[in-house]
Length: 446
Ligand code: GLN
Ligand code: MG
Ligand code: MG
Ligand code: MG
Image (cartoon, rainbow, N blue to C red; front, side, top):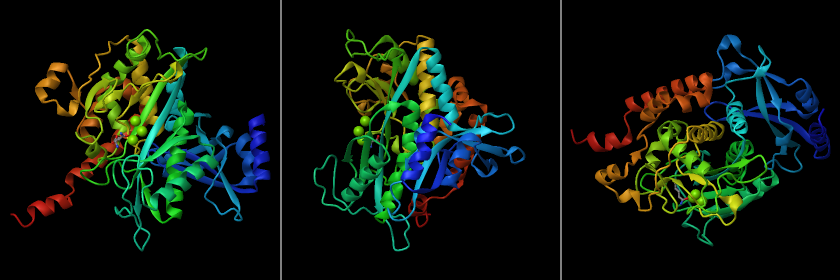
């Protein structure tokens, strides 16, 4: 056993942990658990835990379904939402190993991200990332099902919203801190019932792990208060949806921020610009991964602080990429504003990295920043500025993904194929459905 593994065994002992949840995510980003008695922890480290992968979304074909979970001891955390006198449970995030080869399973999203990080490393970089997940807290009905009712009259940054939801948010933050999160900021968002919690940036892998954990913790603690937390991107029409802006920067091997240049007007290095150019170039395909639901595209419309246009800016928030002001060189970074919290964080960050690195490798030219409000541009002005629009629905986004070699390859054949198949099916189901809007509009009229 390694020292960290031994430390985990000691902590299981001192914390009185009875059950271990071994976690991984499927291609669609859903967290999966295999629960084992804590006394199997040592075996989990030395031999791994076997499971049948055929029941996991997009994982394997039935005939080759044996997978092994290899827990990452760095991710050990005691779960905060169990009663203290009840037995404690802890989780570890796992890598998935294909038992037929003994190699990492190519359908494991965490492995896809690790490969993106390997590519960055070969180019001399490590990657830092920080997300800003937004979500709604809704009331539950008598049967415990989610409604879209909010019991809350707060608005953006309201100090004392007179609502119960802020108590829930406080408990969520305590829970996250118990699990080792460093919560940087949290606030009420623009829409009623909408919240945002930001946590400290970290290396990209830890950040993706954190997002997966975050969604689980937020939902579990909200549920304890009889609230439903949803990361659905646009639960209520005509008000702001929920985004997950993602900040990203590259560091060199000696710990310098490769995105920073003191002499540049925007503090951005050539690498940062080329990286930005790469993300802009591949933006339509990235959208399929960062905005993977039918509902995601109800958020990506003008007027609600969500991006629609493929441009970058150092100040306005209607652009796809923003260069936030940085107080210190280490904080120079770019913010991609399209991702929403329904995405698989491993895959979304992986495609972002590959697109950006592609920009650096091919020395792509970064366009000038657009400092005006692009929502107010008409088509002619957009053409004049050379500004493209993001795909307007899931079907278009998946087409863009299939046409984009860099982003498709970033996912690897296995994930790319399963992802495209699942998303095409989802979009087709949506297309043949008849919505309430149509019934309201046409049923009595015709
Ligand atoms: N909710 C907005 C979005 O959909 C973002 C609002 C903000 O953080 N300023 O991205
Ligand atoms: Mg924010
Ligand atoms: Mg926000
Ligand atoms: Mg932001």
